[in-house]
Amino acid sequence: MSPDVDLTVPKPGHHVLRDHLLALDCKLFEFTAARHWPGAERTLPRLSHSANHGLLWFATGAVMAASRTPRARRAAARGLASLSLASLTINTLGKRSVRRPRPLLDPVPLVRQLKRQPITTSFPSGHSASAAAFATGVALESPAWGAVVAPVACLVALSRVYTGAHYPSDVLAGAALGVGAAYAVRGMVPTRAQLTPPARPRAEVPALPEGEGLVMVANTGSATSDRVRTLLDVLPLAEVVECEPEQVRTELEKAAAHARVLGVCGGDGTVNAAAEVALRHGLPLAVLPGGTLNHFAYDLGVEDVRDLTRALVRGHAVRVDAGRFRCAERQGVFLNTCSLGVYPELVRERDRWSHRIGSWPAGVLAALRVLRADGHPLEARLGSDARPLWLLFAGNGTYHRMGLDPGRRVDLADGVLDVRVVHGGRRPATRLLAAALAGPLTRSPAHAAVQVSRLRLTGVAPGTLLAYDGEVTEVRGEVTLEKLPEALTVYRPLPND
Image 1 (spheres, helix red, strand yellow):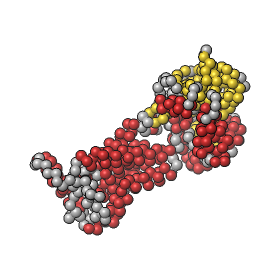
Image 2 (image 1 turned 135 degrees about the horizontal axis):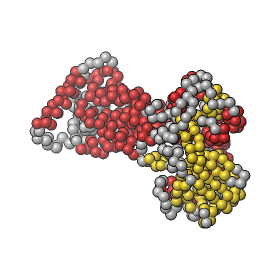
Image 3 (image 1 turned 120 degrees about the horizontal axis):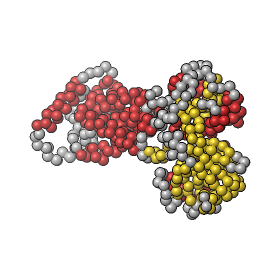
Image 4 (image 1 turned 120 degrees about the vertical axis):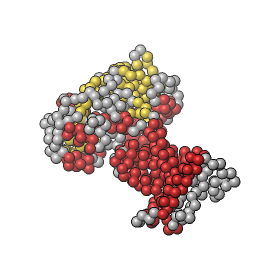
């Protein structure tokens, strides 16, 4: 490989300000080269080498993701996305715009020089850009993880001058570009902090400084033991009931009979069962996410034990909407979504195979089987029109697309059902994909969207499946979906917490 510094290009003429800045840059480089910090001569060259091609940051992101906390996973993903954008910018524009040669290594002791010297142009520093982009991206999503990563990023940037690979101005320019890349990513995909649900309407609930009066029912099928133990460390007077999935509803009923606050730890299906009991008994609900997706808890702003305990200790809660479906024989509530058509069929097929081949392979197999099936899974009458449908989706609250984010709710008390319909026709996979990509567009040849407080379907065939918050039931005849405005009181941390 040959260096990309063209030595045949004539040097630019004299410019007073530029020459002064370059002279200052060289003096700072020589000053750093003359410093001897204890342990740095062994540590910094190795740290600089570990950051080649972003390996150090990819490894750090993997460690963060392994912590299994949603905030850490999002921070790792944001950091790596910021790093990728910074690297792309450096390699396509930065290095080719300013063809600055690398520093002369005469002032740098041999022991700290890199074994393999870089041959690309010096300005700006790609290592510094990657370090700053990763650290800033992480900090924007999780300040705690950002505080852990930032010192390492600073040492990587310092090591590029200490080992003689870059001038100080190269490092500063690279770091500035990296920070800009992180903010650019935030512009495309907002952080959770930017999308905090509104703290209204406020509800009057008891504050539980030590947890007295809270009964927390935990679904052991969701591997919640570590979460409830952490909860008891903070709220020692809380009562915790751990039970198997088939006992959840029974234990929720028992808990509601003597609790001041009904708590639940589990996935969306478990939270749905708790919400139905809380609504019937008029109790405030405390939700601790313990499942795989936890849509309701995350949209509420409760991601872990720390978020929930802050709200419980201070007595902070809001009222949120619930959705309800009704037909002749069945009724139920939903906190996230209710759907008929392809999705319930897919859930049934997935459950049929998941215990044999695992959840993700079963999901792929179910999608292939359902989308290749003949006929439309749903025939319904909306108003005066009877039509075939591939999917009818009703969200409890408006789902928004935020940048490249596929969608989430920022207001859980907006009073509407977010209804999306995918029309029947050929090529269901193409129609469903087009509807998903269209997001908030209100109408297309493949789908339509409307926001209503109530929806009535008639002529629903017997045995039609309806999915609500991950659960599946059968409906027929007339099916009504309606909104229960501000019906449920839930604890959640407020912005001033």
